[in-house]
Length: 356
Image (cartoon, rainbow, N blue to C red; front, side, top):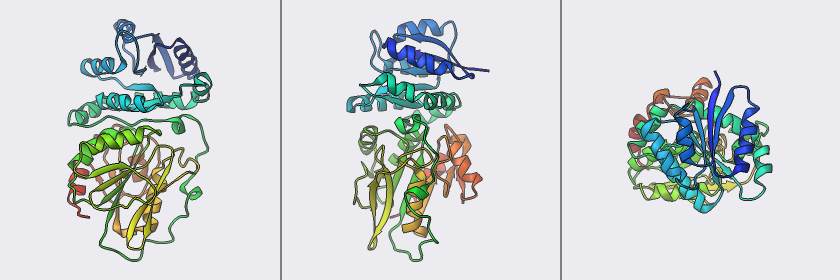
């Protein structure tokens, strides 16, 4: 059975290109392309879509208001199609908080060429969104969480599936010595902003330093970190080179950059660097986790949470019931590197009990 998609965007060019792109997939059917939410609501009375691709700034009714109406009436996977701007990032985070499952960032120039280049990635985004568990989205969002993750250009443009070897060597063995300073590494993707906004505000200021990779495009991570910082007892900020991982601080990997942790004397510090996509992502969970294994070993605890794909593999895994998408935790479990599988609530309690 095909995935029914409704496109809602005031740009005729965007509607035309997205319709043509999605029509190339045999398992996707575009059931309509509306210039604003009012037209879309009338069309949805005839047939409710499985996935909605939604712009934010539109006439008569903005996309955020429309999204909230959808989530109240009949929760449906929504992919936000948003411009890659600082203003757009803030508005899109509000949309994610309201229940969107992903975001496609579109440039303000060369739009047609970008969308055509991104065709395969967009099709996969629609397929992923169709599999999102909206009951989990609504339940966790009701507890004060933002909703699932943003997917940017790295996700959309096809690329070779490289491993973390292209960024740093695998550890020859676990770190042989311990310090009193512990760290936590968290990796997440689709559903991750929702999970993080549930998890991080519930941690005490005494928890160990935290490094986070959330698959999210550039410009969005700074706004996301700022948003979390206003909700949390720990300090949350976008990571910069040389930032220390200390108790009560959570560092979010910048979109479009890899985040690594290195040892400097007895301290752990962040390294932010360019590099190729790893498991088709930048930042990559694999890269963060490997760097933590190299520099911290037994001093670190890793947590792999909700998301699509197989980026990241050696840690505690979030269970299927509490994931919006079980892809990454399932891969980590299948790789045999998971010590324990926990619900999001139990992960929160476990991390809250650790002192830095």
